[in-house]
Structures are given as structure tokens and as C-alpha cells.
Length: 116
Image (cartoon, rainbow, N blue to C red):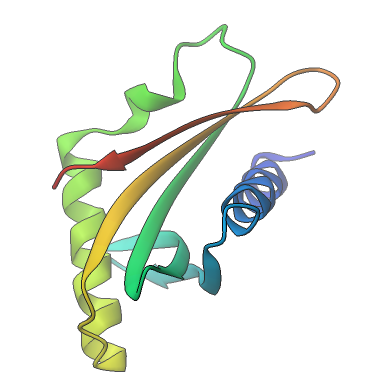
């Protein structure tokens, strides 16, 4: 599986993870020049934007290490553009979902709210 397909696969697992917890899927892979929003859900009458990062095992560090200040700025900019385009200004928050995949394709999820 190439890196693009692996990313899509991890996003699919994350989508299932959040839907199993009652989040309602709204959109996926929203691309702007400034950044990409991996998943968008509605939950508790607000929006939840999710950054998904996948890794094959923990050999190269934690998935959390990918959250740099520059990355967070790009996510906020993408959110702003998405909201402007749809005129959707419901309350919202950002979440991170790290998907660590074992050789047998079982997944460990590291999920937390991102303070921005």
C-alpha cells in the first residue's frame, strides 16, 4: 500500500472510530492550498475537525510528534476557509487522532482535543 492509500486507510479507521462514539460524519479530505482538513463531524450541536495521522508501528516515534506549530496554523487556516465557503459558524473544536497500525492491521488510537 503506498503512502496515499495508507493515509486514506487510516482516515477510514478514524472515521469508524468516531462514528462508533456517536459523532455524525459531515465531510472528508477537504483541501485548500493552505492545508487539508481530514475529517469533519457534527457532535453535540457543534463541529469537530479532526487531523488524522497514521504510522506503521512506533519505530519512528509517536504520531503526536507531527503536530508542529506550523501544522496547527495551516489547520486553522483551512478551517477558516471551509467556514467562509459554507457560511457555517457553529462552535467547533479540533481533535487529533493518531492511528498506529500493527503488522496484523490492528490499530491503536491516540485521540485528544487540540487546544488552539
